[in-house]
Image 1 (cartoon, rainbow, N blue to C red):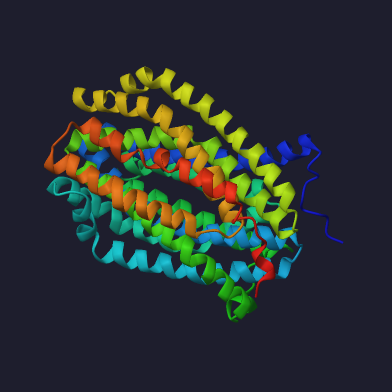
Image 2 (cartoon, one colour; image 1 turned 30 degrees about the horizontal axis):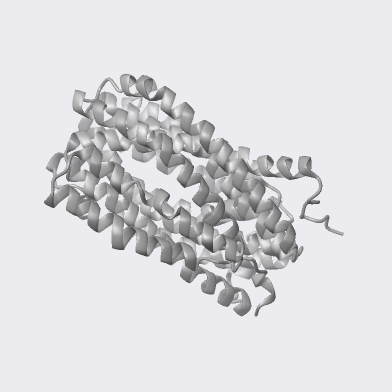
Length: 457
């Protein structure tokens, strides 16, 4: 008999042990991933500021693809967590098979676009010829990694919901360490290899993603729970498909609205000059690093709350959301304070930036010390409890109104019509995670998200 996957609500130690058993490996994986992305930028910044700016803009294509995968995996994780809560492993594997079909298709579309028209994609983000050319070289090579991502992303998500969080994180961490080593070898041409510069960063990413996909296939062959079965890939399970697509409409809508909206931030900043682009790229790297543990708590929330809902433990789910929210905010407050204290040191270390770019970076980081609190609250509420209960529409509607009807149009007016200072534009664009907190708290208190969607055919 399979052991229960839910937690005794009176056992506080067991609860927090479960939270951090999930959160810490996810945070470490995210930290390593961000360090590799930082290494791309830092290693290329030694070559030139143009190389730094070009890779920052070129990786926006990867960012959009990753957003699509993230929100597809939101559904994969939500369904897997609830089926795991009710101990229905076959439905977990059927969910995985359907998710793989979708993610492989998305990866193939992005591969075709980045490989066949990289220059066109770069022109979306900048009008500077040198940045377009450097970004074009990067995209054409890195496009092959999108195929590998299509295979591994859904499988890694299901691993986290079948008691293999540490192994899932280990696979991704192996890939990012390989990426880091590959960057050093191929960007500069160490150990007798050719110095490929920005193309070397792209090739290192392809190799690392290929290894990650290979590890996922090997794990699927060896495991007994959560296998990627060819028989399920070749068949159509109608109840799983209908439920998955029903949830995916809201999730993917949220991903498109939020992901493309966030990419538009880079479009606006990208037209404010190279100094703004370089400072924004480094500020984003630092922000993602400081948010790693907070995002890990959000990941824990989705899995833990999803399992409780799948087991019909609704009162327990309410208790756990409150605990997770307080835990996340505590971590965010400490993280924000650390970032605020380290900002002068971080900005002084960016020696290759111009004086103007360093000034931009310093104040961007100060602003992000407060931004992390809003981002963490959204991670626990929207990405945690709402998604765990299959409520994908709230995030979609919230970001549609917040981003596209307010933040982006006003931000564009401030930047291009009223021509306010760069830092004012940056701060306004990044208010999106803060201004939606009151609406999401009201939605949380209505408890419409509190449901076991696996019982509805």
